[in-house]
Length: 212
Image 1 (cartoon, rainbow, N blue to C red):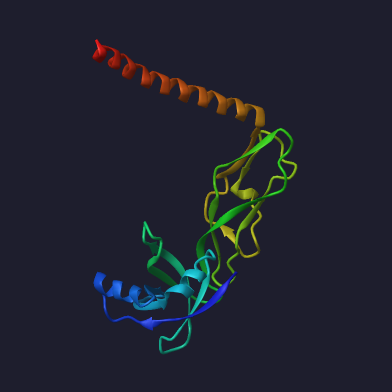
Image 2 (cartoon, one colour; image 1 turned 120 degrees about the horizontal axis):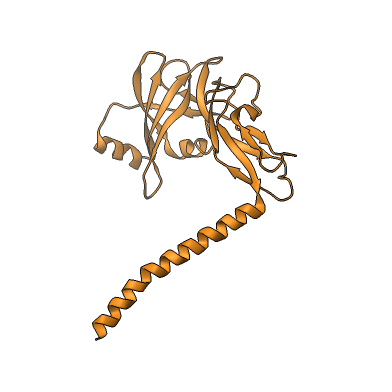
């Protein structure tokens, strides 16, 4: 997993006005909590934090708080819905060797059999793993899997020390028949076209009545 060292500053002003001033200074308001300690209100350098958060479940080494460095994982990242800049970040304190629950993307590996189509139902799964050794993803192989087969959470290839949090019988993906999928798509397209034609018909009738 990726580990990034970042310098923090204590934050003593609160509220929307203070948060805006922090962001104008190129920093991001954040809260550091966990292990039964009182939440610490801090600010982090915006550009460095933005780059770090491009890596899912990045482990942050927080410096500058007066004592030893703290390890933390991003738990809630708030962004401006329009411009996308970071507004606020919640960070969870962790320790080396400690287990945490995180969501990992599912990476599908292998080639689908001829005539088959991958229909993926779940793109990420919840797992429990060591805080300082979080995998980047979990793999699911479709190599040689026959059409009509369903692959479940228990079929995922989990790294050592990682266990599932979700139901192991949860459906992750299935291999469907390509021709059947194409037929279903065509049927849906025809149905949508018919609905659109029906919706336009009354409008044309009303236009004729108006002309009379």
